[in-house]
Image (cartoon, rainbow, N blue to C red; front, side, top):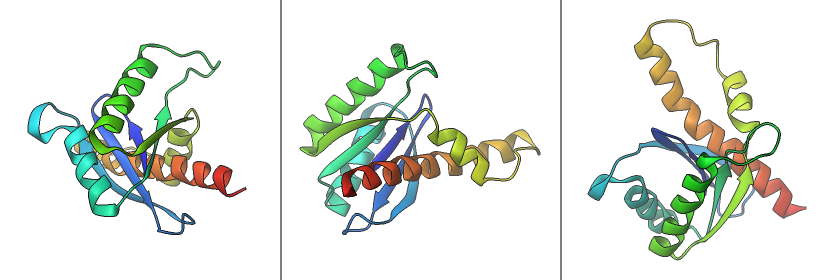
Length: 138
């Protein structure tokens, strides 16, 4: 499983059991409490019997880390405690750009752009997962 952790949403992607194909799964709205992203990801980990989670690390283009990286690492640590799954981090600097290129230009109303963004998050997670699977597979 891969996660594209963002300020408002978390994009989720899952691989097939053989670890060959990465597919976008869903977008989770971030929140607190019972409906939190941690809770939903934990449900998905159980449902799909996930043993490894890859989370995109939002490094700056020059490779520096910032406060966003610390938030992602804190999320990953909490997720590891909640699920028992392994958590790894992978540089995500190019995944969102690649996902955006997969879609037509934004344009349109504010609502339409928001709908596009919700679809973009799991695609970015799938690109991240594909990169990780390729690395792991050789």
